[in-house]
Image 1 (cartoon, rainbow, N blue to C red):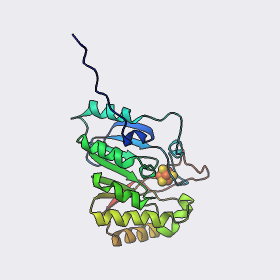
Image 2: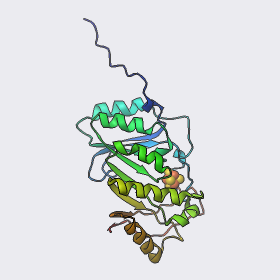
Image 3: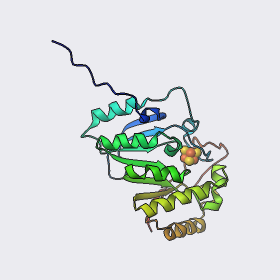
Image 4: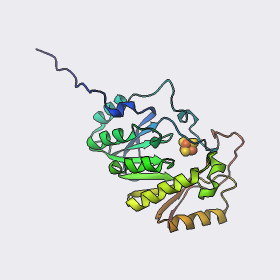
Length: 228
Ligand code: SF4
């Protein structure tokens, strides 16, 4: 009797996605859903409190192939609700929309964690997205203190406006950096977010154990959630 050959997948655009990490199951990264998380390699910013230094360079030697994600999802059909693309910064990579489309075609919900550095690319990803967790780190004029990149705040806030206008299920997350974490500052930030149409805002604890800038020492409050 002839053995049945396993299905052969021809390379797709999604195979060019550079993946630095993969979590098979989490209840934390997509509210209310059981999700796998794909950690995309590369980010254009260098936030002082970043905990993911390994994911910042565009390339590294131990990348996970897209076929590994495809295989995982094949095994987890019926057990997983969603796949979250995180990073690093997922929109850094041109292959992202193809990967989103492939996951969507497999029947999973698609979530995205982004800091919003590329509003136009985010717009191109929108047709496949069910939920977005967007980092808004500070008021736009203060971003370079965090990211080290001029104009980064304007880009992030442009991404925010795009997502609000699109009406997508959106959670805005802020990790307050020391010096930009006073109650008065956070109140002004929440006011600007409310003006921008944000309804769900989360303050996240600023961890420092592996912060990119070793001088950074945070001492802020525990995570809090606000319905604005
Ligand atoms: S915190 Fe996010 S946006 Fe900032 S450097 Fe790290 S991965 Fe990039």
